[in-house]
Length: 174
Image (cartoon, rainbow, N blue to C red; front, side, top):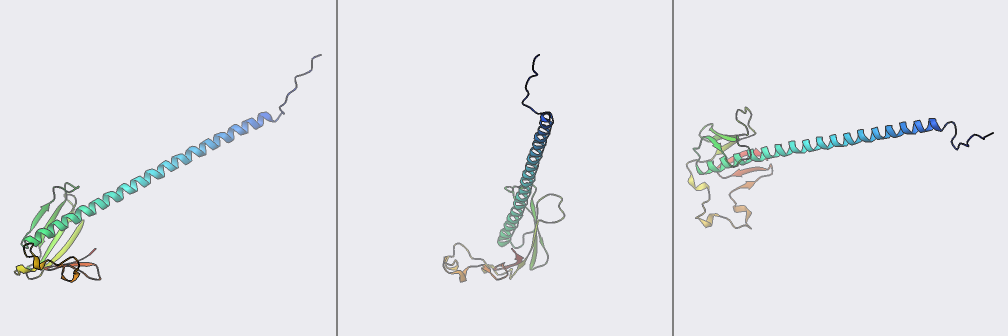
């Protein structure tokens, strides 16, 4: 008579191999779900950064248009109409300059054609529009202060962080 082969495995070994397979499958599922979650969160973070970048670019473009309009108003206080910057990152951006009365001018910057709300708006007050001596000229060096003397600069910063120009009082907070 032949002896039956000796088995090293117990009768429960088959049950344990099935549970180990189930455990490995669950671990793989959890790892794949966590990888998907990490990818989604990074996509959301990238989208958030892109949205913030676009908003900052819009603010910079609007501020640039507004500063261009103010610079042109310094040269010609009677300026009115639409100002377009061809170098702006927003190709449809424009600035509207409208006189309110003899001493006030409204300047509004729009980023898109058809916009109803301006991205930036500012009311400028002209002081003594017939007085041409309020702006320093480059050919008159005595009117330009040295760098170490801040009291003679043509613009001043007050405690409310409003920029006050001679001839213009923007009244706008930064």
